[in-house]
Amino acid sequence: MTVSIAKNGLRRAVETGNCRAECGSIAVFLVITMPLLIILAGLVIDIGTLFCANSLAYAAADMAALAAVQDLDLQMLAEGKRQIMPDAATRDAEAFLAANILKNWPGLAPEDIAVAVTVYNVESGGADRHAFNGRHLSDPTVCVRVTFPVKLRFISAFSGTVSARAHADASVVRK
Image (tube, rainbow, N blue to C red):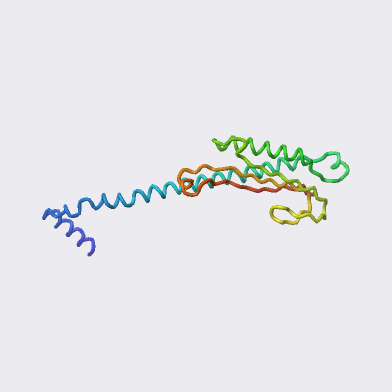
C-alpha cells in the first residue's frame, strides 16, 4: 500500500511538473553526509593502522624476549644453575627489535624506538617480583618492553602523537 502511494505521488509530481521542488535535495543530503563519511573513513584507516602497529610491537617484543632468554651462561648451566647473561640478552633483544620493527614499519629511525630489557636471574623458589606487572617470578626471566611512535593521518591532527607499546616475558623453566 505504501509503495503504491509513493509511486503514485512520484508519478503525479512528474506528470504535473512539480518535481522541481524535489530537485537539489540529494545535493543537500550529500553535502551533509560526505564530510561525515570522509571522517569515518579516516578514523577506520587510523584505527587499523594503530592495530597493525600494536600487533607488530607485540610480535617483535615476543620474539625479542625469546631471543634474549637463550643467552644462558653455559658454564653455570653445566653446574646445574640457570642464569641469563644480562648484557648479551639486552644486546640481542635490542638488535632484534630494531631490525624487525625498522624493517616492517617504514618511516621510523632507530632512535625512535624505545626499548627496555630487564633480566631477572631468580633461582627456583626465589621470591622476586616483576617490576612491571608485579607477578611473582620463580625462574630466570627476560622482560622486554618496546614503544615507538605511530604517524596517523587523521587522529593525529586532534590528539598529537600516538605510540604503539608492547610488553613480553620469556622464562627459562626446568624440564
